[in-house]
Image (cartoon, rainbow, N blue to C red; front, side, top):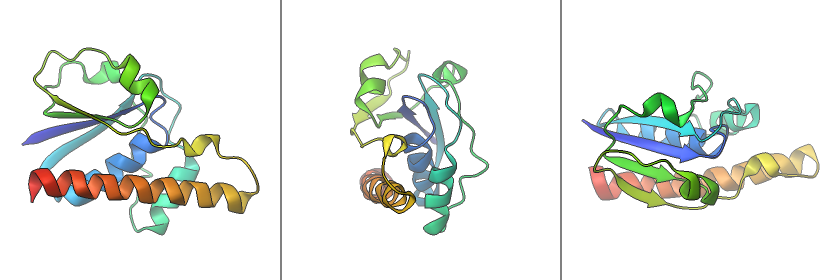
Length: 138
């Protein structure tokens, strides 16, 4: 079974959202992991935003990249420039992919404006993950 790692800076929003979508779209055809070069905990707004789209990520955990150093990944997806630039070397043949998504954790404004920014990023990640899985697991 293929193993996919989604890597972000803090493993709190973008990589958590991507993990949720990739797991949903994989339908058991791949093992999905997410990690950060730091750990900030799963952002409650990311959980709420995903629940709006029918995906529960509340049981996901914020993991440090070092926890997965012994796993031979097939794909590593970085979802922010910081993670791409600081991604540790994996002694595997993992194919690397990168897409820099805006960080919804940095959203400002009213609660409604912040929620809207989370939804916008969620939709960008959903589209990317859907396309990624369709190209590799269709």
